[in-house]
Length: 85
Image (cartoon, rainbow, N blue to C red; front, side):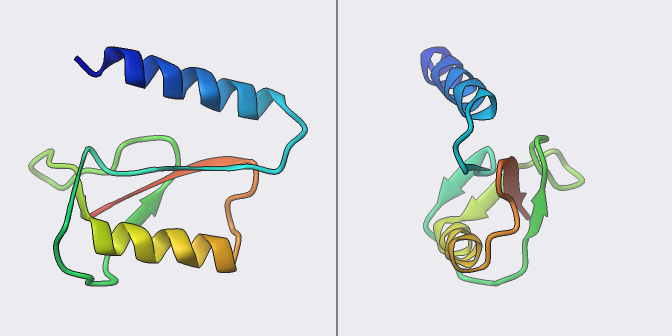
């Protein structure tokens, strides 16, 4: 059911990568939902971040925190990065 969306995002990332634009592609964890703002999360590159049980999750609050931090203090220009617990 999610294949079309995944393919569209893959294609969008390719277009950005091939462009001369300044871009950042922020990929969430596999599961994102409202929860607590902890400020304790891991950032990574192009691979999904998961815990020792294989769960990949992040609260919407921590996702927003990391997104605003990247907007205010860019560290991933022309890069993809991800987040998870």
